[in-house]
Length: 303
Image 1 (spheres, one colour):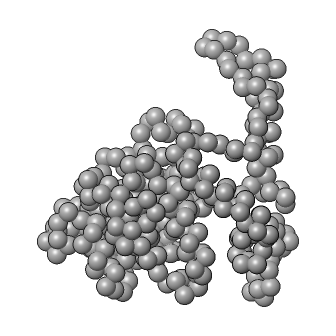
Image 2: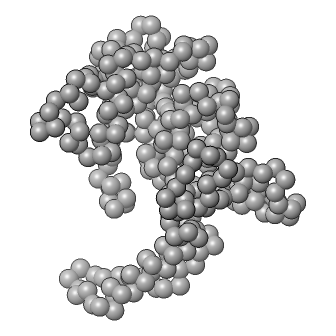
Image 3: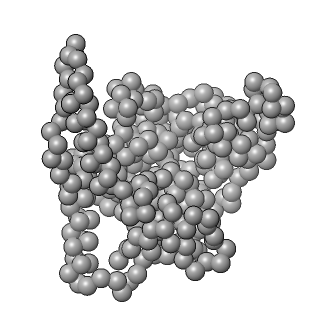
């Protein structure tokens, strides 16, 4: 069974904290943990999530007893209605709060990118790999792709990366639960293939040896040498952008490409509609699948 440890540092002498590890969360697998009944309950919860994964069910054990407040157009917002809406929010977030006071987020993208390089395979146990695959299967959309967030419509960026991740974890091109790989590959090819992946995806594929740097828009590292007072110095960007473009600029400058393994050569044949050697990469620099654009309706849902 997997156990969640909150605000613990473990026995690693290289890890220290100035706040008693508040906000830190670790999942550890203990093969001896739990009784047979508890393990059966965990497996039943997994199967229940799998059966209802496309139903957008929320917090099955959470019951919101405070009635929803609806305000019609032109209606005045009263103190009572605002207070009721606030109480509903506090009720929900207090139920989701961890014991040490923080809220447990899901940072699936960085986790996926660590695995994509393949260098942590000797570190990940079989149970870790099994859980990563389970996570991927459970969030696959009905059309075979994956969205930018777990409830979003399928995009080329996320679908290609998840497909590669499954292949690197040992699934065949037609493998995976409920034919996950086959369905994902069909979605990719039906929507223009991996040449239509967005700019960040092009960079990731180039690093893995699944795309050519000639097909990426330039990200010159020399921009980072500009004075900080320069309006085009990337260091003045929002932190999410600069933390992304700094390593991208370095890797672009080095034209870094990982080892070209037999698996990489196989994936090259699987994610494109044309032979890899015949693709004109410079033509694809500005190509991006239309389905990958964030629609206004999706943005409103997120807000």
